[in-house]
Structure formats: structure tokens, C-alpha cells
Length: 346
Image: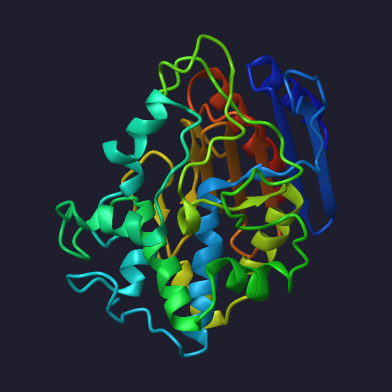
């Protein structure tokens, strides 16, 4: 793609250690990498490196839940017995449940601020109980607030419905049928193999005392599970986006439900469907060719931008091994995203 190398070089010059960009479409795909996967060794970044895709996990879990709806095992407007107060499956999927985000509570973050090597003792049920111990942000269906608690609850609902672990259901229903060989929801016992190392930028808003320079947080194990625990490559994520929006994974009816949005009222997207974002602006940088669909993912040390056209025929996936989403590095990642997406769409 004309100019892609220049955009990649600009991202690295702006302070991102390494970046992978994939742009795919009917006429083929372009996949390139720049910078380093390991600052200490200088090992170059490659398209084969895996990343923590963080909240892009939500799109995988939403697809799995909607498959269960297609099969009649769940209904979108069923109340979820795991949660008090009449919350429905749909409200969990589109963040209108009112559940506070356990991941933003002091009990979750404080141990990491004291020690980045802290290993979370949360489990899905403990995380959900922590969220439910706080007042609801609003009555179900009467507001919108992004919350990882919703997708922890959905993961538990999948396990309750299928009788199998969430990891196995993701593998059986999505990962293996699509041939996503680098994609997994790993456990926290050890870092996944083949990962690019991840780095905090100086003065990180979540961990301001981490250090003056880049801080390697590759071994950091937050509890995110169904809300953000998956690892993957740009190639696998692009394949998944194309299959999901192209109709391989869901019926036409469930796909239409997925794309039915509510106003999201935040900087990351214009509107939110059932596990999917509609995006026309990133870090204040407007798309020159209209909106895209997908999800963004931010984990300490990692950024994922995964977007596609509404038909799934065009995809762009940007992976970076730092999670700064503002200032100059964030702007250059946004410019890279739209350069890849709009050059193909147009």
C-alpha cells in the first residue's frame, strides 16, 4: 500500500516501540510491521507476533452469545439469573445494564499501583460479586456505561448454558472453525508464547509511579477474562472480523441485532451494538471515508484497533506494544488506522 511504510515509521518515531498493520479486502491484503518486539534485545516486530487484544475479546464473546441465541439456548431479552435486578442478555451485551466496572474499582487497581508484579486473585464470580457490591449506575436499560463486568457475567452465562468453560466454547465455536491458530483465551498461569513484549509509556495515567521511561509490563496479569483476556495476531483478528460481519458466524437476524446500536456517549465510538462499536473518529482524528465497525482494545502495554466495513469485506487491524491512546503516539496510530482503512474502502 502506498505510503504505509511512511505511516509505520511515523508511529515508531512518535514513541511506539513496535507496530503491526494489516489492511485486507477483496483485492488482497497488506501486512507489515515496524519497530521492535523487545526493546532490550532489539528483536524486530513481525506480523507473527501475538498481542493481548484486550476488549476486542468482547466481540468474540458477543459472537458466541449470539450463536447461542441463534440456537435457541438463550434469548436476548431473557433476564440473567446470575444478576439481581432484572438485567437482560441484551443489556449486558450493549452496556445498558447499569453494572459498575469492577476493573476500575480501587480494590482491583490498588495492588498493581503498589506492585506491577502483583497477580490478581480475582475469579469470574469474585469479579462479578465485586461489581454487584456497588450501587447500580442506573436502572437496567435507562443509561449507558462501558463495563467489563457485563462481559464477565456473559462469560459465566455461556458456561452455565453450555456446561463447558468459556475458553473451550470460544475455541470450539469460533477459533477452530475459522482456523485462528494464534488466538486463545489463556489462563494466567504463565505468559502466552509468541508475544511481543508490552511497555507502559512514562507517566501512565493508571500507573503514574511506574517509572520515568518505558516500563516492561509483559508479565502483568490483570483479571479480565471474558471482558479482555484473549491474545491474537493481526491476521487472526482480521479473519474473525471478516467472518463475523460477512455472515459466517451468525444468522442474518442475529447479525442485524448485533448492529442495532445505542448511543455510547464516550470518546471511543459513536454508538455501541451488541459487543461491537461503530467508529468514525479515533483520538480526535476523523475518518475521511465514513464509519467502521469493530472494537478497540487497551491493556497496559498493548493497543489493538480492529475495524471493518459493515459487510466485513474490508478490514484494518493495528497492533502496538504500548497502550498510550492520547498525545502524539495515539494520534499517529489513528492516522495509520484511517490510512489503511480508507485506502482500501475507496
